[in-house]
Length: 379
Image (cartoon, rainbow, N blue to C red; front, side, top):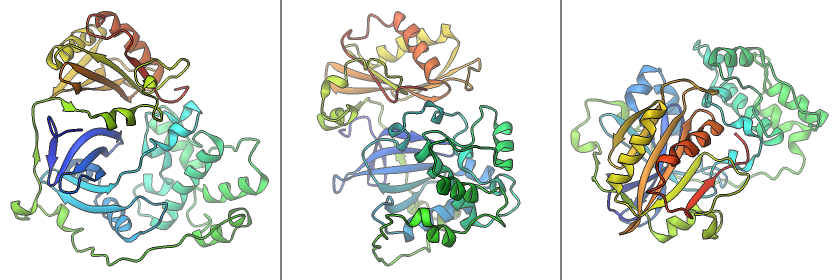
């Protein structure tokens, strides 16, 4: 994307949102000095402090600084403003891991609690290594099963399942795989298998190739500084915003498509139910957003506008909580805009039902042949 309509943080120009979690948002960005693409994880300081996550965030940053591994995303630097923390990381293409797994149960409103060890949820102190191993066990289960071991639309019910390790393994799991996962997902950290025992496990060692690590000089002195409110203003970064739609260039347009087939960008994929929908329009960006707002409000959606973005949230809860939709307008050419609607919360089918309904009032702005649905085959 070009610099028009871009938010700049330090030497980085922020672009599209790559993903959102409970405590952070990840955006694509470009280093204006080198032209290199990066991913920036943006965390809200106030939310981190309110949920007593400072220690966890410091551990995450220190771990990312220390680890140099071919299969682990590299962190380049950490910046801070008065209200936010910016973790600049290596940008890896290919989309979310979940998009590679078909089972629709992965689309959950609970987010990261599905991966958290029971002792972490209880806020009574915990061994970081044991808690991290539990999370690795959840990921291993997902990769093998195609769905989450613990899931419930009600957060308290989800926690009860986690506390009891209330899960079962699919029949295609081998006996040794079942035994290993059951030992990893042990709710008692004192009897849970250790990392060293996992490494020595026969199932784990089969066809295992140890990685080669890089070495680097690491400085962790700045970890406390990012939460230090007494820092000089000159040491902090500032977000600079421009009131124009973000301009999307040809390369990024292609990256939105599946592979290099541009027809998949502007043609509806039959049978797909995704979390993102895009369409093009020849109307001005302001008019497009105004019409989307007018079409969404009668359907019971609150509207929050910021620059050329709209956040829509359903006033009534759906099957998986309140449906929330992030909408952004991109400039593809001087007389052509691309509109992206992305589900950030709620049920995917309800998202598509909303889109089908709202487009009835948007017929005059949508280029009829320019529609795309991207994502997995189910919710």
